[in-house]
Length: 208
Ligand SMILES: [Zn+2]
Ligand SMILES: [Zn+2]
Image 1 (cartoon, protein in one colour):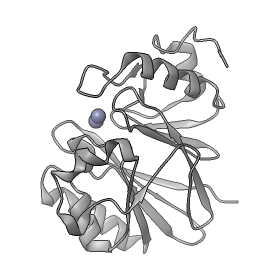
Image 2 (cartoon, rainbow, N blue to C red):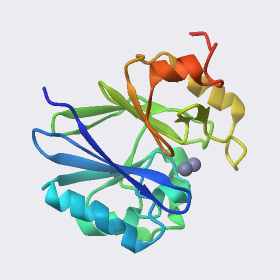
Image 3 (cartoon, protein in one colour):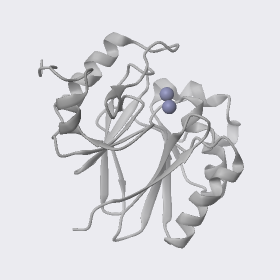
Image 4 (cartoon, helix red, strand yellow):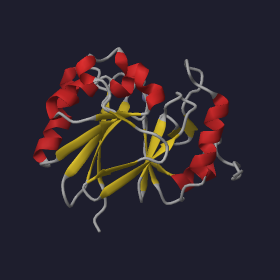
């Protein structure tokens, strides 16, 4: 079984990671967090998709902040694919879109996203925003702005909640150490490494 392919494009003024994840068998693919600041930033992503001959299946937002969603409409228009987001963050993206490009699919805890032979499970991880999600595959996790290498997302924006974040981190520490973490900003890491060195989740026992 070949592993899911993940290509990273760092976009926008906040250096947001936009990921294109694809199934090596079928070439079905998804875009996660296309937070383009400028239309020109779409070009390397579009080129990669066409050179790799990927079939776009959907777009996912890990949460509704502008640095993760500003390119939604561009890619919705280009590939005519559904946009998926947690319902609690759907209001964030209304200001960047028109009626024609509202979210088409609401993602809830436990939903499974499938494309080609790949599966990603939705983990609802509020705290950074009410509708933040992580996407968990067999060997990796897209952690949005919930978990970063050595840090976690801020909880002091509107809708943020430190107590929700603590519960979300409790969920994350139950995941296998071997998962590769693709965060919303910064370098990749491993769940096991974060359990050892990340001051925000180190010493977090499993409470449930
Ligand atoms: Zn954010
Ligand atoms: Zn962000």
